Image (cartoon, rainbow, N blue to C red):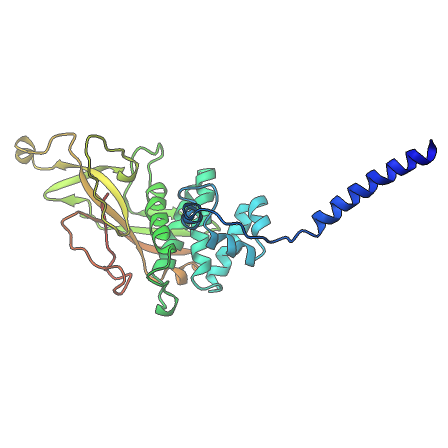
Length: 296
């Protein structure tokens, strides 16, 4: 009886050992064929439409040994990426990752300074001072970076209750002890003899009753503003109703953003464009009045 018990026990131990050995011998990397739609979703995934960042940003975290730190101490990991960007390490990869990961962290915490960090770094990625660091025109990160900039700017400049976007000059805090000095020309919020007020993010508006929706590609926060006549006679005969809104685009422009990331105070100019303003291609001398504005 004792021998039979020992043999049964040994057989069980042997079976478990074989199972462990088979698992241990299984290759850690494998390939599985999936549908093209799944591959497309993974390639276009970003902090804008998912809880996970884009593969490009994940690779930067992995290469810099920051993946686990970003999970445990996101602000510490972002500061490390900030320093790498200031040092010019990683070329265009680091500012893109810092833009996306800052946006994701801002979304999860509500800290507006990280939305502004995303804006600065997205601009640095899109419009580097060195033409040799400019991303390729077919780089899939271009559209993601532009949308990170657009949505980040809307959130960074939103009013305390988030109902409107507050366009004004002033000092805005950035993470890691920096600030952005934003300059807005006094007459920038004038259009066709009217004052532009109550800027609402157009990207957050849902339209119903129309079959076609037209979007103009470009960079800048798309807004809908109320135009108020300033002259009493004009106001009395104004053909615009009180609920009418005009589309405008807000653009925060930095001169050599990557260089300024090393300074305690960054400087930027805030401009507001209407649909009638001249459209200019963004790849022609970026940073000097040549960025395509858009309205949604």
